[in-house]
Image (cartoon, rainbow, N blue to C red):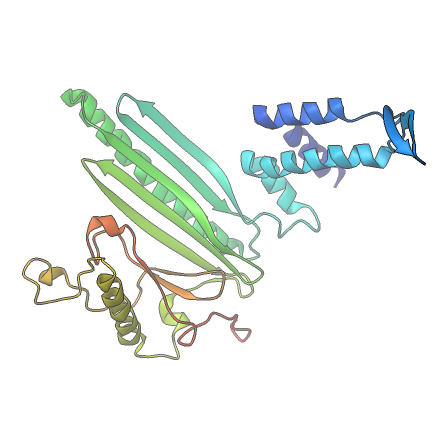
Length: 310
């Protein structure tokens, strides 16, 4: 334990705090009076009196602690090794769930790539954790390889005005006692834009990766049922001005009209336990609609942990 705490101290001290935080910390500590106090003029019993206001040690250190907390939280995101060590300390196992493991950034002329690789830490099922992390790393590395291939092609072809942008990043959509939902997304701009989203819905209690067929195993017709809910919502949004492809007879978009979801359609569970069905850009409508999401009413589905699962 002592070795682990010493290692944690060394990693913490190596963290480079942002200049704004350093300056704020310096000002707080410089302006906060020592325990001996500072001179103050106050009105007491109808008369003005000048004296020294005593500042206790705990008040001073409470202020310092507040600054330290900010630096500590920043450290979790700034240092993978610091976060990993914190997660392994007794009582801190649940503190860190997703952290930035690695980053690749290149910017040259009109070409830029920003690849941020997340990593899940703290799952009891090491095999599941390794599987998810390996898949994320594979996806990120494939984006890097594609960017480097495009960059080489543009440079060799002499396309000085070509604009290429690649991004791979992540969001934590849900994180509570029962569920961790991690979203990774890839975004590419090269003339037009293209994106791909992937969601990892992790049941923390049963240490498993949730799938749509498993979640809705008691609803054998869930594909048609959910599709009807989504079609109704698309129609409602179209009345409000959107342009979802829902009319198979439409002269221009009929062949792209949405009919039903896939059995393994992309989804995630939000912080209220609601099922959210997701689509990629252009999949069910024009690109300006972005990546459409449809929240399924809770009277149809609401997530709860299945304590009977292995």
